[in-house]
Image (tube, rainbow, N blue to C red):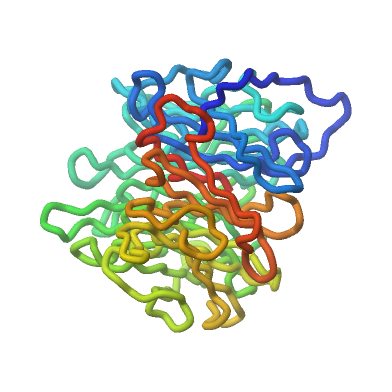
Length: 485
């Protein structure tokens, strides 16, 4: 994320006539969604881990490398940069106010001194993402270190035509569990007015008692129709935590099915995933009436150094009878490129989208721990195609910085694949791939590949980072650890 050292953007008045609702991340309403990249560990002035966001323009030519860096010290952005705030830890985008320009919600979970986290909403405009007119939302009640803003996702849950915003607050609402590790909760902010407000919100909880209670509920969020009723359901990941005895408390996946009033209650459909990441995605892998849930578990052994695995959850039943059938995918699965090796971290990042436009969602998996040409933690991305019977065993691909046409070079600790995102930036009807490499050149970087054929092409691919934006303190920023999609 390059801190925008350019002139601040202006918030222009919305058109006089009713505007068409903009697609997510299309901040200037031109039909080309921008690329948003988080650098949650960016130093701002003397404040370490203050965080930042870089916005890269898009056009028919794809994503431009001329990014703008925004922090809480940028003109017009609400709040002020501070140590350990992690501005840019999560994103969600929609045209929240229906003015024809997409808006951006940014998570700021790390506020210190007993404060809860925050979400900052920046408005779109004809000139792009604006730095005036933005506002801040906090969790209702007394927040107190709730990490509100750890995760974000947007969808029209209540069917009123306006996008709502779900926000994870992972250290809120301790009911059971080890000291200092609360259950967590998710707040759904109701859309439909000019701004979100805690007074128009619903608080959701996971399992809060018994042996399989949720720990850090809201660590990850995703949306899809997993019960087949044509409404968007909220899928919530709970990270769980390892204990000193090495056994740990397992992570979990819950589904908050949606009715007219919005999502909830939430029902746990899987327990025991102690992922070490927040890899969660929803998409229709089999092309049937229900979306599948994909969960990455990059550290799937008791010692935390196994190759990694991706679980796909296929749901049956409805309401309290929801059940999940689980399938495993590893680099040892037939047709998946590569092989299982310790510390690969296969599944650290996941994304789903129909790359070949055949009606089945395809899976993109990041393995930032992958050793390439003897370089530890160089990283790799794997594409596995969906099909009627599940994932296909042929035609799958892998990309790394040693792949012909991919910019950059294979280097130790680049962590290529630390984040992955799919979005059609050039509006050609094909999803483009952005790959985060948070260890690249010490400050992090990203690589973009255009959608083409049944997957992606390395032709015209780009790689860029904070160095090209002349940001004064790029070291350790973690650029590319969070991507908007």
